[in-house]
Amino acid sequence: MRRPSMLSSVLAAVFLLPGASAGDEIYPAYRWDRVSAGVYVHAMTNPLAGPVDGNSVVIINDDEVIVVDTHIDPAAARAVIAKIRELTDRPVTKIINTHWHDDHTNGNHAYREAYPEVEIIAHRAAVEALRREWQAMEDQRREAYAALEASDVLAAAESLDDASDAVGYRVYAGYIRALKPELPTLQLVYPETTFDDRMELTSTGRRVIVEWLGRGNTDGDAIVWLPDDDLLIAGDLLAAPIPFAFDAPLEQWIETLDRLAAKGARTIIPGHGDIQHDHQYLVRVQSLLQQTVQRVRDARENGVSFDELTNAVNLEDFEREFAGEDIERLYAWNAYYLAPGLKSAWTSLGYPIPEP
Image (cartoon, rainbow, N blue to C red; front, side, top):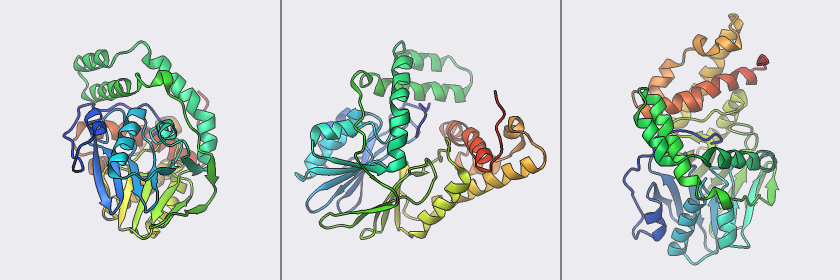
């Protein structure tokens, strides 16, 4: 996820692997899930809490450890490193960043400090975006957070009458609480190994295939396919419980998800949210994207302008399906999917956006 989002910072109960580590105690907003032999996911207990953070996947092979995505907060990455060292004495030799967003890359530096020889891998377009966007984004955070304290933002949330605005404030407070201590020394280790279409990693005990299936969440989204485990790590091509549509080319994203579905993986680990043990959620997201594009196309053909789009395109049926009455999900639906998704559908269809 790209933007500094706003959601509840209330911490849920923690479900850990046997034997809680110091990292777990420091970072109780996350849980560990064992997916299959040697494959673990470090995920937020509430994927819509601030800071909205991507899942990190640990793959323990016979001779090495591979990590997919490294969290937004280096402290969370350090918690994963602590757990890895409890689980195995094998070194982390490779990191795969599924895309450039900072909730999947900010922990790279923590791994390079812990494992100086670690190789960091990403799609060529992801590295180009990191070099173009990352520094300015983190500088903007430093400036925005400098005069703010999480406690003050939370206090302000309590005074708001609008429940959705209050959710936004609480999420923003979560970003400040997690990232403000790290920002003074935060730096990025850029991936040094890039690929364009496909690469298979040489590793004892398990095939690990990294692929680019097409544009989707960003121009350079990678998936990680473990055919021996019948498991696919999707990055933010699939995020739950609400998809993220910031700057995503919806028409091409639909085609990319078709290719992802064609893998037929029994288990899908999304970039955010719960592990999927079937394709039901994937199918729902595909239907949402298809209908968003179709309804925007219909609106345009009926003479609707870009400025009229939000009022003209009705996606309330999908809002009920994805968000229901849950205030956090409703906030995320409006902020992370509806507003950016309508714009992305409009531009992906080639329609112009008027100058401000």
